[in-house]
Image: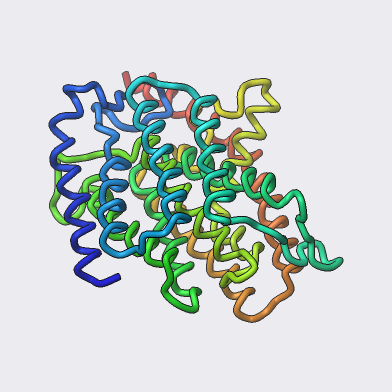
Length: 354
């Protein structure tokens, strides 16, 4: 992949954004503020994912060899973008998205051969071989990661920033540039126009766009594609390192879904209980919440990479990850109460002022 290919992909993504931005209101492809979990005040077009996928297709035609496995992978990506875009427009619901995620994961595992065959020495009693459970476990893991990225996409730049950290880490650890690394480089290139518009960087204002379900599902899909490939038999990392790379979205999603199940509601029910919602309320700034969460992601990714490069035992790193997750759950238990207290306090202050 050459630099000019990345530039072309960047341009294609930018052009698609420019073309779709004025068309989105006409076709009803707008994200309207409607409940308290949404922090934007005006309708915003969720067209980022369509633009990203368009740039990826262009880059694939330029840089990647014509190979059947890659076509299966891109077919899964196209399916998720299509279903995500329809969900952004018509609200298809979580069941349809879940079925699409399973089908896309099967395309990766059965069509591309991207599977986890072993989990390494996670428990300290020897390598865990998956055997006949390889494909089911891989599909389950893929759907979990895709949903984690989809669910954490709640404030400007968060999902995109976490993806950049993960992709950058995988590229640094890769021993050579192959098709997966080219895909990651292409995704970084096509992600930039979206981030510039979404975060209103470099003086670009009045063109805010969201990823939409099409974008978050697509990015989660490419991330898990790269992670499973890297943690596979001939990969560049071990499975436990992959957990550290996606620690923030994984911990947040598991906590939120667990809480919803305990409350007797669907784990896919949208609410304002994510970590980024709490931080945004505490600091009265989504940008500060974004910086804190990205900093935490860099820190945890750094710990995982440090353990991998220094050959610290997989079991040690796995139990360390579990300990951090347990500590996060403990803190989150009190954070939820603190969040409610802060909201009540703010309402009282507003009432006294008025």
